[in-house]
Length: 376
Image (cartoon, rainbow, N blue to C red; front, side, top):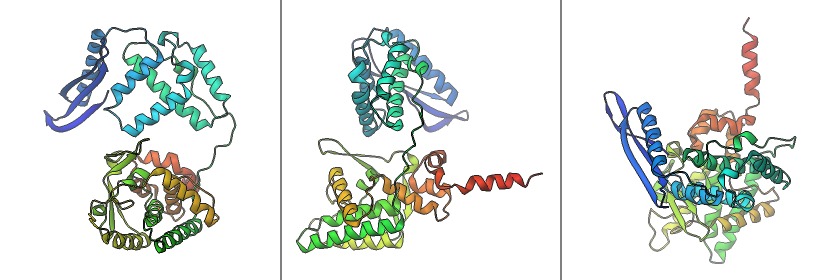
């Protein structure tokens, strides 16, 4: 139930909007929208509105499936579609098959402990198990807020923990490995152009942007020619592909993700060369996607090219998102500080960058201890 900060003040206090989406007793989607001043006042107003909603819609005995459907209906206008889709996939694959018909008041710790044990026996990675636990916990927290249950039974069971398995290291390309990979991608595009197919250049450019900028896949999809100047590239939007092949354009992940990056010379030359190709295209517009033109490249096709280029280059195959990790690794190993890396990645908090990439800074702890050792 988000609290939004708005423009405007009164008596030195910021203006806030409290908006709560919920399902009423008749099953209809409802929304309560109120405005107040001051962050503490906004939190108090949220609690007051939640209490009013609970009195209006008395608690009922519902199944986990019914709760899941309600939660998705409520949250669809509050979070990114891609985030909700990920939540649905995890719930449908790891939780619903076993528990969807269980009434909420029957979700005892013993039953949830058995669910955890079954998950352990599937041979899943710790990351996958913890992701399932996280979305399940969030769903039951919503049930508590709506007074369907008095407390979250999953809290008593506890999250999955590392049982001794070695965490898979983050994959990335070194500069030499990427040179081999991108060389194959360029050769592939050149050969395809000789046969009359220019579209292969889009894949070459896609992987070059991914490595040289660290942009997220959706941000590369959303990149238009009017976002690129001589020396700079601006991230203004993200594009998510749905299963049916539709594109959904949204603002970037957070305010920090709206950013402008200086373009390194190798990428500048690649983009300049690519724009010349596109300018010969009939109907070319500056709003064309940099990779794909009218419509961005398909994710499945990008992945197929990724596998093909890695195989031909004789390098390991990494995930598309690992090109972002490769960008960070290259910068970190050349002494670029974590603050600048966080800015380039569009992270809203530097802690996020540090938690993900601190292993690339092994000497930082040594420096810290060395400083402390000098204090007598």
